[in-house]
Length: 155
Image (cartoon, rainbow, N blue to C red):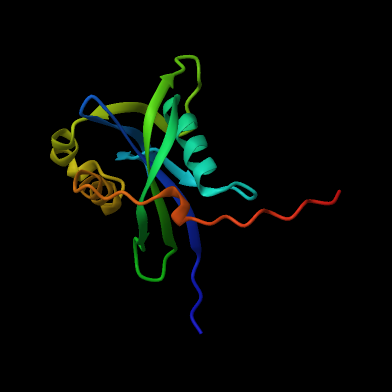
């Protein structure tokens, strides 16, 4: 039986005045573009994780509005598999004093055309796919996700 390493991740598509919010971050020694994204932490629901990752990586507070979809990606055969839940959000405000996560070079606002022109910098094919789905009008209700309450921790 083959086993694999699953990675539960979240990402957020945020638009303001025709521009989308991305991060320039380091991956394997190279600067790449990605949506604000990261791993869900134990005890955190997916929307909380998306909010937290967006704030930590961009210093933008957002309101999660919709579910864009689920995306599964395996960068290389036999490697880990990434299960990405992508949300849509609207920006609420920027905190210029918020320190960005380690490895994040900057938060940038790009038009979809500017992003497409920089395809060689995308962290993965999911970056463009999420934008394409967003621009294509995909919207799923947030209640499509059911989060059963976490059991109380005894300590």
